[in-house]
Length: 262
Ligand SMILES: Nc1ncnc2c1ncn2[C@@H]1O[C@H](COP(=O)(O)OP(=O)(O)OP(=O)(O)O)[C@@H](O)[C@H]1O
Ligand SMILES: [Mg+2]
Image 1 (cartoon, rainbow, N blue to C red):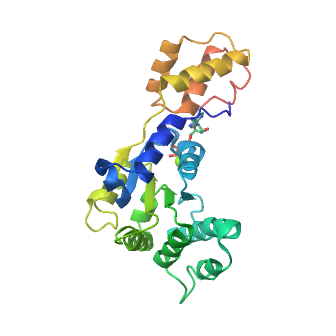
Image 2 (image 1 turned 90 degrees about the vertical axis):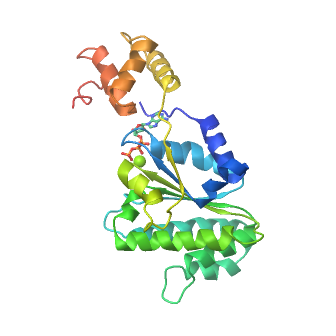
Image 3 (image 1 turned 180 degrees about the vertical axis):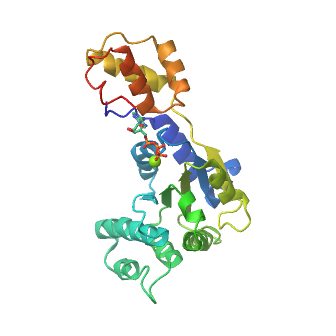
């Protein structure tokens, strides 16, 4: 089952809070750190729902997963993600001047992250949102803390100006709750004071979507929605685990049941 249950309303609400914050939501501009347990759909939500909603709201979205290349440093990965996203946007709209600044990012004597992002905000007159998946990785090393400090410097250089044509916002997604809390509550962390939230777990509407898809595919012996929802909660709201549990209802000859064995 590869089909994705989309969450546009949740994404739109969050995008609105980030891009057009009410007075109560202004703290989000300091940074937003979101905790969710492994396998509950954080990455899927960030890439499939939130990033498109932010783009629809006019922001340039940069996404990087700090667990995607364990041999590489957080700094390398963040700088490369910024370079790539800005280069694409640059060739689309802004001319070649910014290219020189972008190319120097991360090079000795080249532009800092703050300079690059500020230039982009000023030229494009729009917001930039950097989504760092598995952000806790950056808190655990000196080098990672260094890149977070550079991002904080960029945030302050852009957002604290008397007037700015756009803002820079950071969203950090974490699968380690203690590390996530530490990133916003420990005074030595760059994003001390930023907002912490819990990733909204998938719910009954996802379970109903999944059951409907399974029915369409001809699966029988499916449980009621209520039972399936209880199963989903029992497997800690993890889609893969629910599918595995539902396949047990199909009996030993069900297609995919052998691959569903633990
Ligand atoms: N909205 C969704 N609709 C259907 N399947 C989903 C949805 N969200 C997540 N899944 C499935 O659940 C699994 C885990 O999703 P995902 O990788 O997004 O979770 P995660 O919280 O980022 O996990 P991790 O912390 O391990 O990176 C994937 O197989 C994904 O396809
Ligand atoms: Mg993930």
